[in-house]
Length: 575
Image (tube, rainbow, N blue to C red; front, side, top):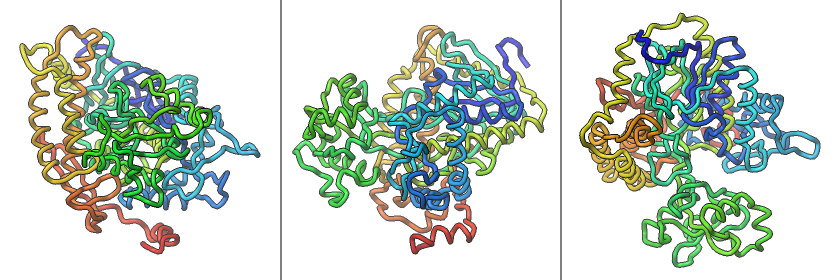
């Protein structure tokens, strides 16, 4: 192996330092192996900190009737039965223990009168099930896991981007990347690798996701030969900030509507009366998101393409007391006083249900030594995620991935890395500097976001999706000739030139899968196929790389054991 590059050796290498990555690191360390964690940003700045609502776990501290069976049932129904039933079962059974662990490690939760962890209600959950810390649960979770990991002695490589997984034959041998600051290349040798890189929101123009969310992990796994599944299922949150452009997509919590916020179009009509006269603004996320979208599409949207959310009819002190974060967010970021006037909001790309196909028990992909957990992996949420299930997902499957990756590492020697792979990866990164002409990565990214926002958004249809695929082909050709100016030092254009590859891969996977699924289910809505189709309820779309091109195959939904089918039937009167 070429020694021109900085090299680090670990038994288990974890890419991503959010809830899943940190929980995996803690578990792998407990097995006595050497663990390295690489993160694209700074430690503690993971997307997990943006989760406000809570951690879903059937602890039955508030509603004593709650148990794992009810949680399992809610998760399966929310996911329209496309979930991996085994993941939904393990998640429901193990979440309470994972929350108790966090508590033992020092997490501070809100409390009931008798000192138990307080739990709140949330959409889609039958019982009050979300363990929370005010509206900053994710932040507390990251703080706790980070402290624990640092005490146990994880090696963290911050502001480092991985651009390629290295392989020894079929199996994983490590990863190649670069330091974002100086642009120097670095090689990680490892017996097993866990991908915990989160979602794909930056492929859309309006998203609640921050700059790191470019689908890196999914693209890395896909390029190495792993399967991506259920990629058509992208969740849009109904209310993100629409204006000014600098804050586009930042979440406006559901609590605004819960406290009496009213949605109006540009004509002043309370349009939810048309779409859900019973629940109005408190209808489910997908219904509210599609309603706002429809108003805009039919010409009744606000100046910047959204709707007005107004809570200024409530007393100012009430708003400031009940929604302090929202009050400050709008005042500081948008110069809008929400006690005096409306907020301009619109649907925002929020969460990815699809991802890397993994085994339920071990989180292992189809590639020996490669594991994935959290939002980057698929299975638990099916066609639509319930609020609060994402945080418990990170804990339950982060732990399982860490355990399985450590076991794998203990049973295998350090693989060999052929230096030609490393040279090729380095060449690929340097190529944009060497081109005499070509598009700017910023222009291509802007065009990609416009295509995904307008053609592969909340509502899809055949002509739009076909057009999106041909536009994506043209964008891929342009991205292959992208040109970057300047040096490798502090060069955001260079970083984006690489991220474009990942975003184009996941964008194509989403679009191909959405075109194939001719029905509406969960977060996937087809205008031309508005009904559920039982035939599609029995299969998944799987995307895999064959001879360098993206190929779509269908695989059957895993058959559920009779005992669990019985559980689902008990309450609903249906199978």
